[in-house]
Picture 1 (cartoon, rainbow, N blue to C red):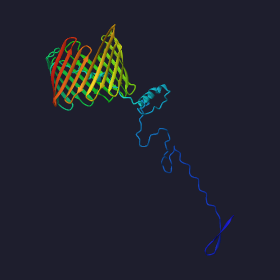
Picture 2 (picture 1 turned 180 degrees about the horizontal axis):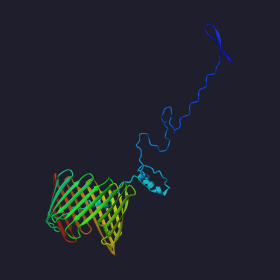
Picture 3 (picture 1 turned 90 degrees about the horizontal axis):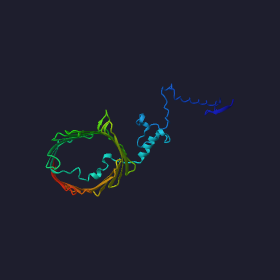
Picture 4 (picture 1 turned 30 degrees about the vertical axis):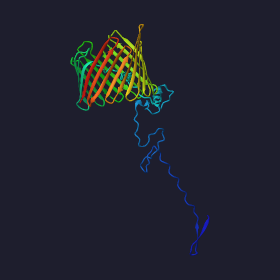
Length: 381
């Protein structure tokens, strides 16, 4: 055995045997992730290395059977080569285009028609009194007399409107009733019911509409006087889809069954192109009818619209073109139009004072040698 000599200060020496320091004990093995540490009585935390693990503190995602359809900006998890995932990949690629909503199918020509006077013409004398009873409810009284085509009549109208619901009803002096109710179930889905009750046989009507508006498309299903037992009535379905930021294409199918043994179908194709300050629309119907319109906005106060209707059926060809304009002045609004049949029409609304407007309407048909003229007032309180 080796020895070492240690010297003390007192000069005494002592031989002490040399011993190696004890070897350190090996560290205990780490506890298994599937068992509890008996000493600390705690379960060791194992880091989660699984892919797509949620971030700590984030809201956990709830599983849904519809999770196979990704959100707008979420990339689908499945392979694009799998036919079962083609719908998800198509929606994902379409959302990347950021296409706008094309609007409703039934309002394809609304921009051009708003410059025409068809919805504003009247003849004789007319007075309208509008009273707002609250922020959501209003009533209107309308008196008309001296018309060449209508007898003297009184109409009472009332309307109720909230953020999601709109209801409006009209009753005239002959007890004819018209009612419209529209309710938005969500920002995308809305239902509208239109009813007309008259004392004349065969003139009453019931119409049910269901609208769905997507980010880049709109569709509508409509039933008029439906009879579920015999499946009679008029049924329409349309779809309008934006294919580019300016171009939208769509189609409409019409099924008409006046009786159980009579059936007639028709199909139309539409296209709408929206520019910076103009809108061009064309509609081709299966019965040989073509309708095209063009709207041009000159500035904030001047707008023009043009429309052409062509009918080609059974060797007969007819066409009517209409051009109209709308002019907004500081205290007045003027609309005028002329068509190829020789008809010239105009309506002027002059705001004389806050809540008081004076109306003048004129219609002259050169081919038939007929003319109509009307004046009216409108009071709002």
